Image (cartoon, rainbow, N blue to C red; front, side, top):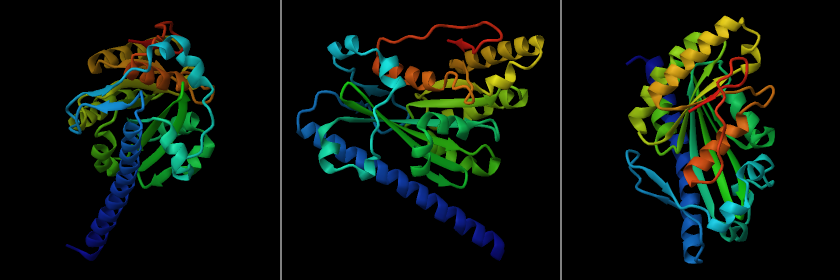
Length: 285
């Protein structure tokens, strides 16, 4: 092997080790919190069926009285500010249950995945995230009736050089967002490849097909919009995925997608309305 090739392999190995260490640190923190919560007799915890990604994740429902009392949309629209887990005290960590949900973002380059993630987590959390070559990790933590829920969002670069990050990003993910640019039909066609890659490592995560840049999409001729809407619906049906059109510029369906994931995982009484009107942000399931 040439000297250049050897150094490239060494850099890739170092990067892989750093990513795995970061993941293990988060996993150990999560396990510690659950051990402490169980020992104190906590009521609501997250239960994993198994560590094997081929088996289904199960989560206990929130208390029945909470489910009626809390409109989840309102609870998640204005999340309570929270210090990042690394800076919180041990007492704060032990006083609340923490349910950690991993979400993976996959799709081509320059379709707005990272912008979408930053829009959801906020700029402050973006600065605390872990940014690596071809992989971004950011957290969003909020409260729903005394239970802390943390989305750990893994954004994989769309360049072919970063396909090696897919196994790490997709394993044990509760939801997988397959994303495309609504103004770029080739990025929609490529979603089938991203979906197949994701399913190699995770067969149970909730699949969601997300079209980005809806604000640019509505500037296209109506007949082109109609064609793209119908194509996207076909792709979503093949993936058995819920379809959302979104815009980070106008914050359209960004928060709603994560509300949908939470409601789906915890069987919360919150539902979305189907919208198939061309020219409006599509929601299809």
